[in-house]
Length: 328
Image (tube, rainbow, N blue to C red; front, side):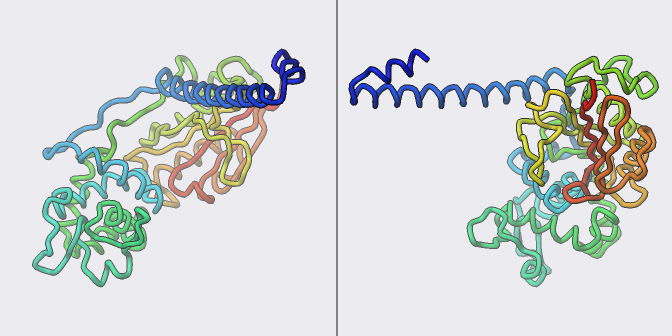
């Protein structure tokens, strides 16, 4: 109000200066708000998540510069929780993480050792430089992920890896290397802390006490149904507000009465039907009386809306459970 009064009574030049100052103040305020939201998200991760270094194989961890590429490629091509570790194992086996790019005696070239004809079919320009380059780590790793998916992954990793190199010993070596990594494509693995004393048997669907409008305790208790299958939380609250369809995400830090958990892990297979993620989704649906465990499924119990997403757009590589307080 004081600034508005000053602008109204000031000369023209002074008005312009005051308007500029007010605009700068508004921009600074917006920046501070975004920083606060990011801090909330970071605080949520640091205070409610346990992060531990991944295991190393005999050759050590995958080089840090490649880990985000394995993860991003596995996500883009829906390779599930094992995808990144398998890409790392192939990269190490084929070229020692790019140290020996050939051409091989068979004529394979590049970071992930593609035959030229196969590269012509599956090569991608993943880094946006208008070139499909098998010697470029990003192009090659994304192309390998694309080829594995086209060859049957994640439904049948044996078939997909055998297509990469037609030898049983090769498949065994890649799978053994991926197990040794158990997520070594990443700097660390993170798992949500379990709220003390919270289990499905302890929960009252009309109990609105607790963090995030009481929704967090339900989301985490339901996500814990996956532990027996090796499936754990990999993403909870985050700064992004909108879903892919334009709605407000239960993951959003600004949504104070909702909470969401994405469920995945290196040992959580995405095979459908019957894989560990599928069994987890079934257990969640059963726990809250949902009519189905696939697609976009919602139900209201007590004071909360529960939403399970599995085998639907954007959720073929992980189940999602969102909880929102809608009553009281």
